[in-house]
Image 1 (cartoon, rainbow, N blue to C red):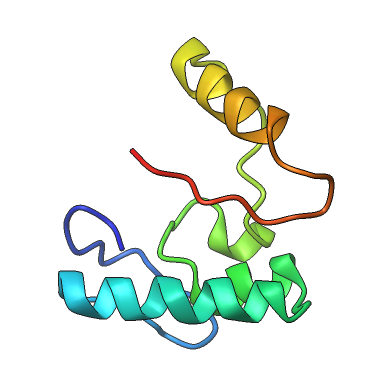
Image 2: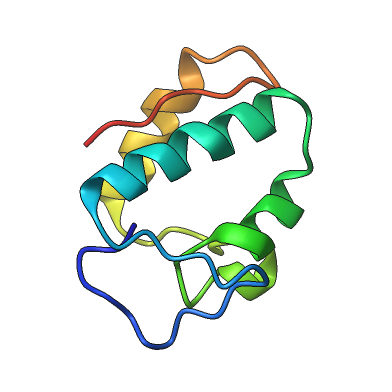
Length: 89
């Protein structure tokens, strides 16, 4: 879910969470799909609401912002390899 509706969102399923409840349900569904072994790139292409990365299979490129790099590194440092970690704000 993005903070505001983005008319540029074009994922393969045309999936958009319009409320917080829809976003929570969508997140839980996608988390379950990834835990079952669905391909991350395909899940991103089908369901991502990020207009910049959906078509790239969720690839966000490199992070130049130090805060984001630190948050991702911290999350990754305590996660076992090839596992899913919950990322919270």
